[in-house]
Length: 256
Image (cartoon, rainbow, N blue to C red; front, side):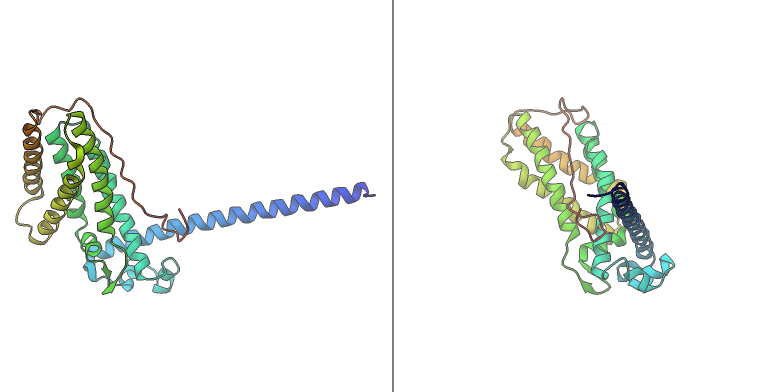
């Protein structure tokens, strides 16, 4: 038969083991949060290094900007491709942080188009080297498998397809054209953005205004073909909400 002392000692041991496990979990959680925060700091340093050195930036440039050695940097990134993916995730976050509120603003059609376009062009204007790096799919002359720009285009086009489809059905129009139309708009905006970054023959406001007119002319023309007229400066009766969900992980090397 177990004595009272036996039971007390065994119970105390269980509590001690439980306490040790809890403490170990807490330490691992703190270490994980520290690594996430440290990795984010290095990504911001990489963005600054991109501004200074352009798409030819190397890992040594990132390390110097972060004030650490390359071995320290490699503790948080497996290789250059890993840093490229982290930069791509950060670029997507920056873009969507501006684009989602712009698309979901309760504005009339033309101001809404203008606001969404301005959100995109403001991002590539402020981070041109990041866009160039991601668009060419290589980091310091090393190709990578991921195509962040293409993935973002697909996410945006998919959301735009749903948005256009909803409005077309609301206007009793055939919504089958929504998908090719969405991809056409996204492709046109991206190609124009790349041209503008390279040439800079006009201001951001000018290129945004030209694209706004082109896109609205297409919408207006299609709607009129179906016997309806929309006021470009009057909000529509029903505002649809767009959700953009980038397919990225947490940037920690762990499943999200």
